[in-house]
Length: 378
Image (cartoon, rainbow, N blue to C red; front, side, top):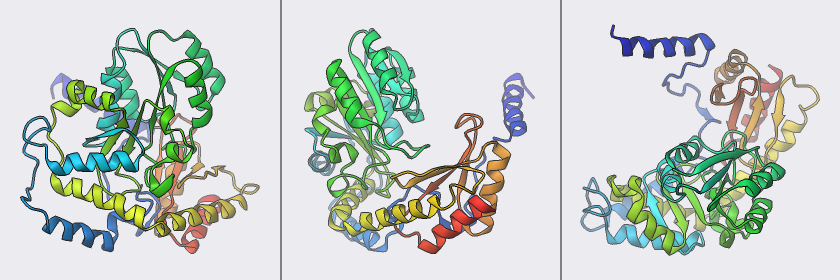
C-alpha cells in the first residue's frame, strides 16, 4: 500500500473508532421522517403526470443541455423560467444554478473581494462556509443569532461588508433573526445575503420564502432559493438586482464553466413552483402536522432524559449526547418502521449529537405520536 492510501486509511480508521464513519445506505423503514421532501412533491403522482405531459408537449426535447449557458446550453425556456422565478420570489432578476451548494459557493466566491469582510452566522450551511474559504475577502463568524456579537463585528469590519445567514437553519431547525439582522445591516451599510433553502415552498405568499413573508426582500443584497427540499426536485437560483445577475454571468466560475441543467429538470422546477402556488392546502397540511408535533412533544418535556428543541419549522431536533447513544435511539425508531437519521459529530459539535426529524404533510398523527414515544421514552 502506498503512502497516500495509508494516510487515507488512517483517517477512515480514526472515524470508525470515534463512531462517526459515514457510509452510504438505503432506508429500511417505510415511514419517512428523514427526507427534506416536506410537501411530498418528489413522489406526488399528480405532479408527476403534469411534468410528464408538459415534457411530451415540448418541441425539440433533448436528454442533455449539451454545454454551458454561455455556449450551447441556453434556451428560451430557461430564460423565461428565470423571469417567472424573479416574479414569484419578488426580486428584480434570477439566475439558475445546478444546486444550492453550487449557488452558495459561487455567490460568496465571486462577489466579496480582497479587503472586504464577510460576517457569517456560525451555523450556516457547509456550502456557505466553503464559499467564504474560496473568497479573497476576510471571513468572520458571529455566534448564532447573536445580535450583539454581530454588531461588534460590523463595527470592526473593513471594505464592503457582507452578512450571511439562513432563514431556517438545517441542523437546528430554528429561524434566523432576519428582521433584527436586516436592521443592523442597514445601520452599518452591510449587504445581507440569505440562504432560503429550507423555507422555499413553505413560507411566504405561495411559498416564496421567509424573507418575503417578513417583507424584507428589498433589504437584501442576494437570496438563494433551493429546489431540492420542499419543491421536491433539484437546482437553485440566486435572486437579486439585474446588476448582480449580470456580474455573476460574467465572473462566477461555477456558472460559466459548468454544463447547464437539462430541459426536463428545468421543466420540473417550473411545474413544481406552479403546483405549490395552485395548491395552498399542501402547506396548510404541513403546518397542521408541525402544530400537532409541537403540542405532543411538550407533553414529554418533564419526563424525557433527552433535550427537545421544538421548532416552528418542519425540522425538529431531539438532542442525544454521544454518537453511540444517538445511533441507538435512531435504530430503535427504524425498528419501529420510522426512518430517522442520527446527526453525529463532527457534523455537529461533540455532545450536541441529535436526531434530525423532518415532518411532512403526509405524516399521520399516529406516526408522529409513535415517533415521540419511542424516541423519548424508549
